[in-house]
Length: 161
Image 1 (cartoon, rainbow, N blue to C red):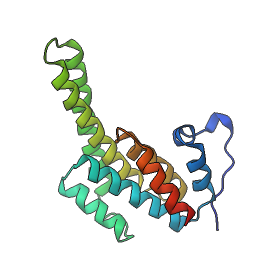
Image 2 (cartoon, helix red, strand yellow):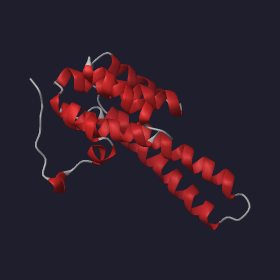
Image 3 (spheres, rainbow, N blue to C red):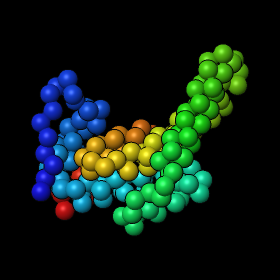
């Protein structure tokens, strides 16, 4: 059974703007394929950004095993994501005020941003609605990458098979 959706233009999702073809393919995919897309997206983001907190490793393994997160994991992912986002915003603000060290600070805040997006992808992958889980997870994983084409191409191959 496909989870096709008709969204009004005002309800257009961020992912739909980034890659309309991928979004259309997700609309036609069944729940199992959507969950596979979540796993692939999270694996991509974790491998790229290496946020190796045990929470991240455990959450990714739960997704791979098609298991629900254990109690409290979503709250812990939210806390970690908020911590990383706070570090990102703090460093970004300091970089904007800095003079000569700005380049190094930009590199640091970019790293925190990408890690926060990776954790967000893992968090959204747990959504009960497979379509919402997939679209939000993919969007966050794509934001964690300097070039999202590799992720989008891999997802299109998965969804076309």
